Length: 319
Image (cartoon, rainbow, N blue to C red; front, side, top):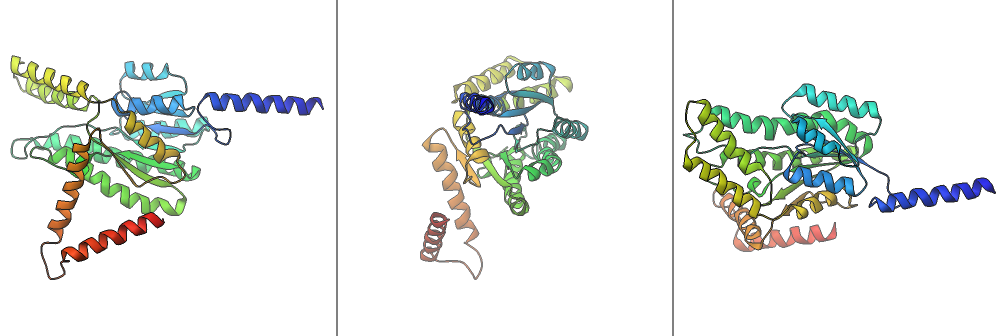
């Protein structure tokens, strides 16, 4: 009888801890790796996951960021530059050593940079792709076996720039177009292993990506022997004011949480702060569809395109 009482008390205690941490009694604490967790979307998501009671391996590069992340309950900060294979391998070894497994991988680390093709050095384009493309590839390749073992989730931070591009935006937008392709290919590869794959495509939310881009551009100019001018200082101040005027990325974290834990995750989550960005992105997709259909003997009529669209909508509703 005493054992029964002790068991009931233990169950009530554990259940209370789970509910207070934001988990249901049927859930267990899951471990999720978030790259680029020092600021912006990555930091917001890491804190959201931790507050919900999950364990977060939060990737960062600087000592001060690692210390700040380690001070948060349920977060283990890990030194992780996604362009360095040795650091990636070290985090894999750490997770294996701790025995927590890895349910979720969030590829969030990324940078913004670039410019007009004829004016921008090749090494600038290379840097963007080393982080935004090769970095995502390296991390996914390294941690996928752990996620496969857990039959978990892989989610990547894309962007509406994966649909929309602009003059001077080929480097960044091109890297986010690649994320779209990666998502579809990886989803097919992971499906037999019970792993769901998603991409979250934010619009303009608060982060440091724009300020960091301006700082890199100015640093390159100074290294080449230039001097900081009032115009350059004004450019950074304007960029900072613009970034801080955007909404906090709460909606982006909500989309990640759905992708990671909902029973029916989506392949794509477009998360924008206003109707204007939604309309711009969808309109661009439609324009691209019409451009694809303009040439060749097998083009569809307007009526046939509308019929195909309705069929796709009906199929999606029945899934």
